[in-house]
Length: 360
Ligand code: F6R
Image (cartoon, rainbow, N blue to C red; front, side, top):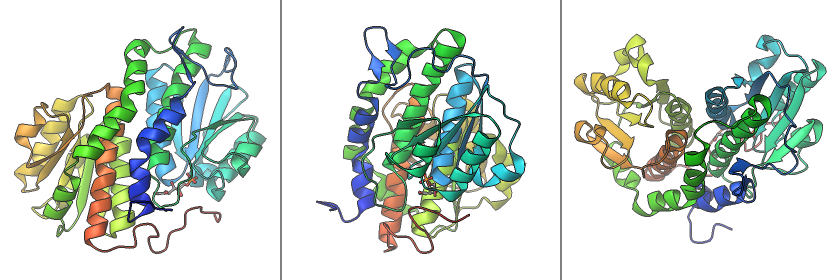
């Protein structure tokens, strides 16, 4: 049941500290300081030359996050929309690892892409929440995010767990393929272990309800970020439109000036995500919107210079650039939740949507 919560979505947002602790549990070898993924002996991924991640919706945003982490770790990786795969798949061979990212493991579009990749000779891996799901059974290998059941149609905790698992997988792949994990592992592993506490801190002190109320009558909601903040901007906008029925869009910060700036008015709040990757550029992009009258809400740590510039602030604890976007995402989940609650939307079951999309 929902326990003390009015909605499963709210409950599941609050389950993220536990979900992430479960995802990480036993998967970091603190002795060697390396990633240990149960079924994958060291060397499992030797010979892999490139990775394609296929997914839809929120899982696609996690896949995009993962592709950036893989590239940063020196592995060629691309995130692809599973529903586009049949018409636009890049070439694959037996040195290609195709990773299906799917909470349910039953999404028809993702299963189609997985089957096509297998038929083309790629090696396949499914990252999913559901043991025994079709995608888990059909891929060569499966890796489970262990987030626990997610009932709300809007994916929340599973996004965070997918992204964290892809960060771990990126390090394992780098270890196998390049003979060494990504150089920043010494700082990343303790930061990963601290994620549950950091998310708890956000859940206890979030002002997302106040911010949601302040901008409740807006025309459109924009989310911007760069680097790992970009998939989070896309995810922030998807969650917002999905449960509030208000128009929302996510952009790469640098894209604003290439068209979307024409839409910016005092009625279009801009939520700017700062992850520590070229934040000064993102701040400049946000200020360009502010100059046109848009209120700017900075999602960043307390002592960040964006706080003084922005009209409002959603605070996240300091962490690695690899993880800051996931903390920002928790604030954006809360923002969407409270905005939808104010509008009295059926949060756990938005109109026209299903938890598991088994049609093409
Ligand atoms: C959005 C949402 C959907 C799913 C998408 C893929 O909140 O939940 O966009 O992410 O339908 O579903 P899975 O991950 O089950 O393949």
